[in-house]
Image 1 (cartoon, rainbow, N blue to C red):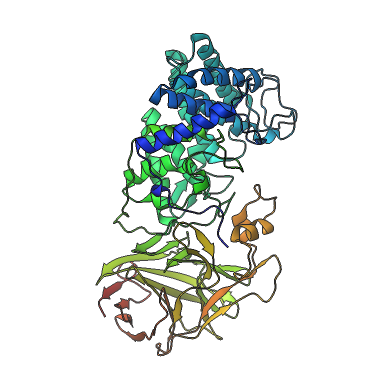
Image 2: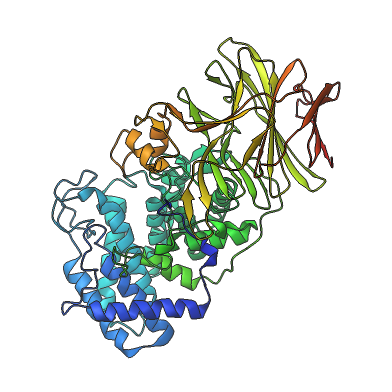
Length: 610
């Protein structure tokens, strides 16, 4: 079973001028064949997200005309623009729309669905999208549309902006991508207005960004991020927000957008595995955007010096939005326009600087959450999620049903490279049910093809084991497929266990159900509205790798040692003396210092060849 949305890395899509001209040529032929006598360019089966779609294709036709001057295109642009202005601009309040601050304003807006009152909640983002299609068309209008039609379009675009910022609450869905998109629309609109009006709109756009978006950022993994549907980051929408920040910086030159974009880019870089897989989000856990992400990943990947293009996008939307039959849809067309206009090249090598919330070398990577517990492990093409036991999720020692991974105090990190290996040591103070404070030292070492994890903790009661992950997915090159096992070896007994119950709150990796489907089933609201991350936190138990204590460990410690990416013999040795715990494997020798750390309490680590 393959995951639906995470397919090929986005930097694999050709992005030369010739490739983009071919994309536009295909759009032109489809559009000319679809154009109705009324000038409608909407896909015949389009129902939702419809208010901006015809205008979106019109903007793509205008860009194609700019680049090739195909005489067939000019007439299609004028006719389709007339259709939008005549049939898709609404000025009467949509019955049931809950977010108005001014009733009967008479200002124009775009509808999510056309029938009055059918689904008004989506009108705010649909109007943002329509504003963006309009300003892209205004950018290309010279020599293409006459003065009267251009003036009407500018008036409507200004009205869209006023409806978004005066007649309704700003960002009513708490969706950062929509809100930043609105700001971009204002910045682009300002360039077409008379100087005084333009400066007022530009200032208001930046003010909204500062006061309504930036001031409400959410902290995660040491970064401040634009809130997405009430959460810190969403796999589908986060990279779209990055693209909006890229366009905001391109249009305005304001450093605030570059600064925040680089922060978001570094965050994405840290959470992405080497293979580009990612998981989690307050709107979607596994759904990934396609071409909508290219601008931001490419623009800021170059700025931070890292290969963000490894992000696995939905390549069915690799060039533009499509309907179920594969036919072009104008939704999100503005992002393709900007992507074509931007000449930034992909940065294709990883950043050499160590990142607190990431360990990455070769084909191995570990992404860490805010508690410095692995949120995703990748080795030998297999991706492991945190496992669940007794409603507790993570990687770490377990005894008597209690998982030791939630810190009770400061988490400290040490990065080191030596002898062809890259390492990260994480030390956490933890408290168990017995209220005893213990220190868990977790050492992650990789040679670029395998990952060694050694976890040491003061002696635990009962019969402890290491919760070592949930094997979930594997890399098939251009696709990601579901799996239920991986190449893992333990110095102690290794078990792959599955939940005894098959209820909705137990996840068995052998079943066809995806993590996102399971998470939505546990979410409080319907799919597409509920928070799958929150739903997943309700999971009671899951498939899990369980590793017993390593033989030969010092008497005062429980030590667990696991190797991912290889199933050959694994016989590490351990000694404990005044310098700390020495771990010897076939690939390295490491000394993990005492939990007390150095003179500043920071963890001590040495790493050398075996």
